Image (tube, rainbow, N blue to C red; front, side):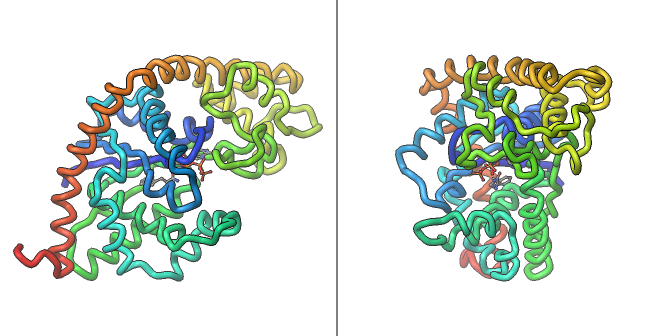
Length: 334
Ligand code: ATP
Ligand code: LTN
């Protein structure tokens, strides 16, 4: 059985440090470990249109995310990079899987419940079926593993349920995909409310570090991050969520363990610690920004990468979808 990895990110706005540390950085690490047959990394534009959006912003965001993937180190000779809507099998498998997904299980999804209350123009039916489309993204490449941040774990569990349900109903076809979630950095929290995840759609600008923030802005945001008043630099998510989040961020950015950092900053003040956290973040983000600016200027190259990626992904998707339809009693001539 082949060992494919699949993952995606929505082009729904400016990416945050959470997206980088929880997701993209891990994709790059896995790419280098080469423990896969094929690795598909896509831009989840069909997911981004499940909430209200501006079409010209979306078009820009798709290109920007492609440039960012490359700037962060994804290498098109090792992973297949493509835009989800350019492989039409995604929409088709999403529909087919809806026939074996239950409304009750979709209504229980935390992301759906969170996003539903934020909609002003009405809640689209696609927001409810979002996790089914996501299961389709995964099963279309018969993924063995799916690297994601912690917030996507519930969707992954549903993808496993749907995959098993299909196999039981129509005969074995799909792997039961496993989530690949890192230990440190899987859930970077908001700088202003460290009990909430850092999210690119948070309306409070100071809550998130964006990958395109200037050095000055990054330093200011970290300096104003919410902490506590007991003055001890120690990892304790429950009682010291702000300091724990900053420790996790610095551990990810500097490559040092949380324990090493606790020792290093024993007795130090929060001001000094925050400066060091900011330095480590700046060292990671600024080089990415430089590459990103270069890549965005090279639209021909970006288009070529995405065109090649869509051709390759389509080849795999088409074969798998045909097998699936055959099992479901569709595909008259096969
Ligand atoms: P939105 O706010 O629009 O829902 P988001 O910031 O949550 O967006 P997604 O596009 O849903 O971002 O997520 C892309 C990837 O980044 C996923 O693998 C997700 O798990 C990961 N991710 C998102 N936020 C964080 C975070 N705060 N910490 C770690 N990983 C994260
Ligand atoms: N829902 C994911 C994006 C996503 C995804 C996927 C991730 C869409 N399809 C398939 C992994 C595999 C999110 O990050 N919000």
